[in-house]
Image (cartoon, rainbow, N blue to C red):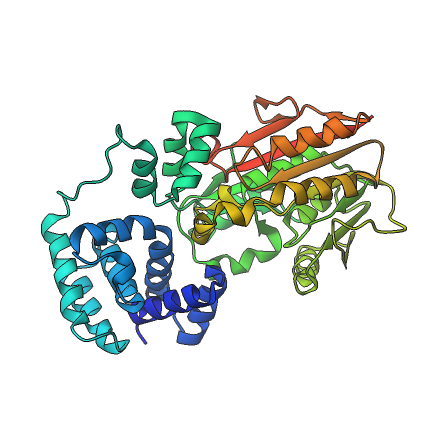
Length: 436
């Protein structure tokens, strides 16, 4: 099966199972044995169609007399992959994108005459691509944003309400693939030493702007090329690193990470503590705990103790903590650039999250000693999951207050939102709460 066939097959499977795109992608790469250029093309096409589906379907509707809902799902998926190649993949010849898409109709046993339909729509796009009218920015700004950046209207409407006209820059930034960021294992090296080692292998990198132990790669680097340095870093966005910096854990502290998997913040705190003290890393999912243990072992960290725990349930005999990491389950809207299927959540999918987040914060605050700190964080941009949750907690607990912290040259009052178009990080929220 070639890359185009595999992309259509995997997209259909993902839609049918409503599974996670990254899991389906990894399974397909292993199944079909893709590597090098084939793997890169397949990955770009698979993720690209998911990311740009709203835009692609809008264009297909403009070029076809059929309603999108009336197009067979296999034919629609083939059209989306063909159109994505024509619109977003400059190095793919137009003839190859069209002809290979037509062939896929036979390969996937699409309904009769589907090949002719696919051929007609794609060639019509080639003829009219510069004349297809998009929604008018002035008449319907929400629809314009939705179609232009392939994000559901409810998210565009919410962000316009929360962040105003700057939402377009936010959406634009989330439409670009971010560079990989590493958190340096300071038990074994320094950021400058790692940058030098990477350079010797032909990998360009630079220090992160805000996080003191971060390194950002300058280009797209295959993960296998980084394998030789795997004991010297973990992959972690600068925003997540900054949440750990805000925590301010010291050598000898006792730290609880209540929603720990995949373990990046536990690892970051352990490095911050110079591997001295104790970190208790809990997660609801037993099958994910091994991710934390594996990362700690690879990096030479010995102070992390893992266990399964529901963060909303009170655990008996918990040690009194100096610091608590409360990186709660969230809608993930700040990481859409890395996980494109997140954008297709509905308002119903996330409406119960603030209540869950507040319950987790309440439950784990009980483990904190006097004078201790909690860092509450999410990888989303949604005031209902962020500032509103923190303010609701503070209204209940007069023994807690916001604790100001700095992010590089950015000074906060104890709460901070990070934006990809402003800070060059994931969309992220950090709040630091101090127990008096």
